[in-house]
Image (cartoon, rainbow, N blue to C red; front, side, top):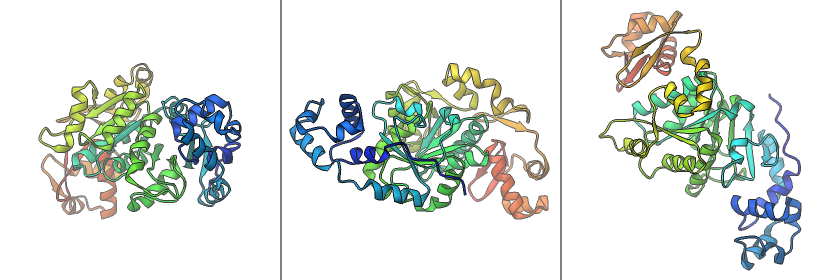
Length: 384
């Protein structure tokens, strides 16, 4: 079992203050700026608290009355049992990109690890009730970006988020999942295994107390963390008023890039990405598009992406994007060569290749993530 990193120094005091009534991230920042330290805020009088911008007499009284009530000792004990560590924003391990947003979370709960490589992160978000096309694009982009050295950030929700995380894991890349509940819970519950896989190869993150439930009010604030951790955010299928669009707005407000994958013009889940594109978001079809959208950083990375890696030999045209043709070997090559443009059922593919069902299933997943084949309804597959 991997050793859990140590909590930030004086984290108990930070927890007591952020859990005080009326103290959110913005107010916390104002208090810290005014008094210079968390210790000073915890010891400040009501009249002193009232001198902080936006803090009136009633708010000051509520802060003073509640700032010592949160049982930070019990919270740290629970965290230790769960393998969770807690970092505050004055700790050098705190993600620097997140610290730059208007309302950074004063504390982050983390199950897993943070790495310097996570400074090179891209968010991929979208709707829960996505189409097969959307799921495929999220997986494909996450897979190729992760193989290029990017950390992929998403929210571990059903649909696009889950596809982004699984695409990253298939590429053996790093991924960060920002939850809208405490880390003693997993939401949605069917992603319990995914939660563990992400924690083992990246991190699950929350700003909320360990036992916080996945309430609807928690998700809009967590979206700003997804955007804040990322150099840019890619939206893959979203309604015009969805959480993914909130994430895109948070990215814009933090001066980060917003990108969008186009979809079918008659699909409701295409409205969000198409609206963003009309407003100036970068239309994304390939990893090169992401590099271009990231400007200088992308230019520095172009020579190191998976699209120009040693295993890449040539590009082939597809209806919507360029997919990369890898030097396929073994079972993947056998399965790929057995497919044509006409859809083939998975059972027929197993029969034609004379391979075990598990081997064929693993191969088609990998080929899909590489953008070489497509999955159609009814468990049918074809070359792109």
